[in-house]
Image (cartoon, rainbow, N blue to C red):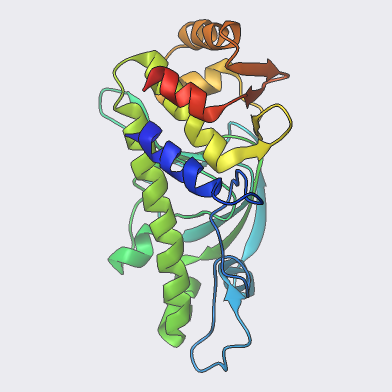
Length: 259
């Protein structure tokens, strides 16, 4: 379950006296995060996915305000996106009108790559919404495909980015499997601590300004329910809420309380 996975990640991050909670996965001691050495290179120069996409023909930087749609299901899949700042919510809309969150993407996440996988013009499968104000670097899918054909290392970078996306989706699905809404909320908070958490003297502060309504929409609840459950967590001394920023005093204690 998501809580167990969080505890495993949290335990690994605390091994060693100089190591603490980190919102990012560990990286090799040399090179940049998410970097690979281009094919035919000597091994002294590595490029990142951001650098690759920025250099492509037709690339651009886009800023989207919180709550705005990036693309709808059914829209033509013509561009690939790399999230530079903020958070993006990917959701699936069903015929009944129910909308289920499948991933909450953090900085340096890649999305909108379906057209690259099918090799033909495709339509969007998900609804992508700016969960916060976001900044993205985007490029035409045709330019990305051409880059892959010219340099296999670009394909490796994209595969790494896509793998991270899949893990985020799996974690979110695990969160939503909790039938009890209090457990679902706790699981979601732990995911946010892992992906958006900033360590401080009091605990882990989620570096997002989250309204109760936004949380409710993300986990399939209601604002009234989330307000009540967060109030219970605060009264129990497990979290603190200040100006829509949530601090989890002890993620392990929170997880064990509701595991």
